[in-house]
Image (cartoon, rainbow, N blue to C red):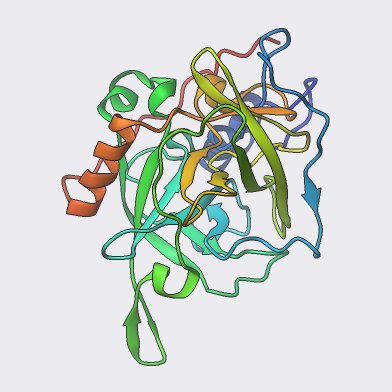
Length: 282
């Protein structure tokens, strides 16, 4: 779903009207929307839980807000640091990125305008061939390379200060994941929910109310698994969904692992297409 944070439709606000109103920034915002499900297609997911947005629930250090540029105060998607040999990789939804991604900015641990680990600049993006050619929702994942920063006179990679979750495989049905995202806007607080996973049409599914505009790319972290691996992120079917109470992820498997390996090896980066319609009705 295009979670833009703009009103006008039931469930989650939609993106194309906002894109016309705000130009390029809103177009990216429209693409960074988060999960849900269209009416009647929610599978077995339930919505008895609601996300929590509170100072009492701080974000994981590796999770943060994604901005279209370092000068923008408007966070449009969510992203998280992924464990890698160099320590410079961030994961988000592919539909959160258009073009090369260069110049986007990521603030891990972001909380109501506070940037405890600073802002890190994206230098390259990697997406799977099926996303680049046809925006296959099963490959709605992008890995972003961020530039190092100089801190206290030394060159530092983002993982050294914010940590990172290892890349895992798709979660099993019934496995509990923690999902953390940021609503579209400025000065946002983290939205957090722990819920068991179900499945719909081959897409892992997460039922929790409150994952509104801007939460696309929000990491799904396996709560009980050793190392707390990244096992999904809001995106996939309908670019994450059509309402705020049920979200999807692309199934993490061999294709996502190959994409990660390409980003780690420094292969040729991608130029991502402008996201097309998400297929939601209304």
